[in-house]
Image 1 (cartoon, rainbow, N blue to C red):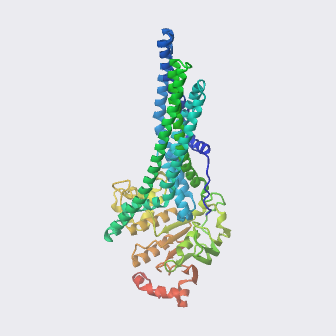
Image 2 (spheres, one colour):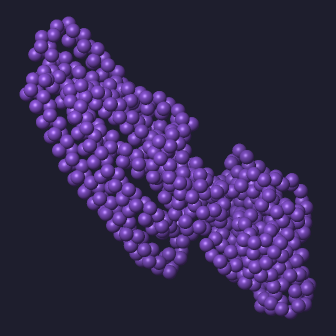
Image 3 (cartoon, one colour):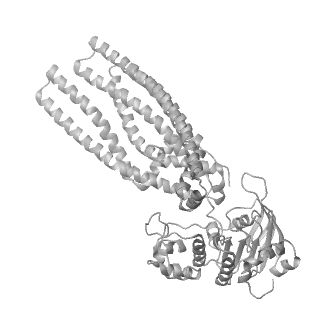
Length: 606
């Protein structure tokens, strides 16, 4: 895992980045940008010139025919501009609401595809939390850039046209608006920076805690413990304290915006006062006729208000820019699993060798595994045993390339697994974990882990029955099409812990990978059922390499070799009979547990 590289792109760069995505997913939004520019700017000035011509007709006696002609032209243009604005408003909402989730999916794809070890790194988890802000709301991050760009382009061109008109009368008015507008911008930008710090950057860890407690409060799997151990007050109290802290920061941010609003309001009042005084003096000095005065007054208001809006939106876009930078930090600077490397040719004969492998988790110096040297030969059955915390699960994570060794190498058929394509390497393994997860899909999709049209339902049926869920399958009206969980389907079924582990076994059987890994998958089973499950599953995976991880010894007697771990080291290695004859730690552990398996044992002496 590499350190997170926080790179800050400028606003123009991020606008092009976002609109590149817009062009990919909803290209008509680019057209809307130009339609908005023409229709918005046009509608703002049509009314001003219409008023000017009417006043000239009344005061200066221009011909009625000319007035009618100009009214028809300007009214027609105004109608067309209105249609353009309606088209923009009609297309902008669904377009922006479609594009933002596409960026969200891109972020989720990055999240799912990153190195597994990154999911346990606090620094990266904070980056993930901050990146969510860029796709969380209509005026933040990605969608904010989309919407504000459409608005600010129209406002900038409005200011340019108004400046040209005002400059023909008094160029100093332009500087008045610009100076007051810049002062307003600095105030708004400072408030936006403080707001982002208070409501996002400084509380990303608290937001993750809040989301965690919100999730477990409604998670079915926590329901029994919450009620029987009366954890309600603890959970609610923790959430209440977090809510108070987050609310306090929100209030501080609102106060920052309140002070900024008061300051910019005073600036607006002063700006308009100065500009109106200038126009009045121009009128009194006979430099302006009444129709021109009306035009200039309208331009003053249009320029002043629009320029202020440009500064305000620019400050908001800078806020969005910071959020898009957070998004791009995750999307571009957190390493994904390598997709390059050598593809592995499928066979049934693989040898895996740990060559002096040591490992410490990121951010710590403590070695969890120390100088592991171990060879798993083709089709061998290896039992990895030891007490909790001995390093067994870490060994499995390294074996399956979820982590990389701190020192040493892991070789597959003599080649360092770093050189293999990660996806190709994963295809070798059919793992069954203790903390197995099922999804709100059908039973068939939960077993195949593929879409319905890519699933062999007959094979699913066979695997489910082999895994010991045949009786449940016969009870369910929809068979393998039965929905799992009630999150999406009212008729979904909730599996018990033991049933979920059998589902995991069916999943491993369906994948039919050449290497099977069982990482303590029998915690929800009693000792005799555990022993029988291991023996039955061993027959089902005959002819494959199998690694059984457990602190209980139900799996050891039928394995070819046993590696006993203690404090991150292999302290005993050999067959069951060899280790029993050593009369050391393994033998003592086995004798302590033997009574639990008497009913399931064969006549072989222990």
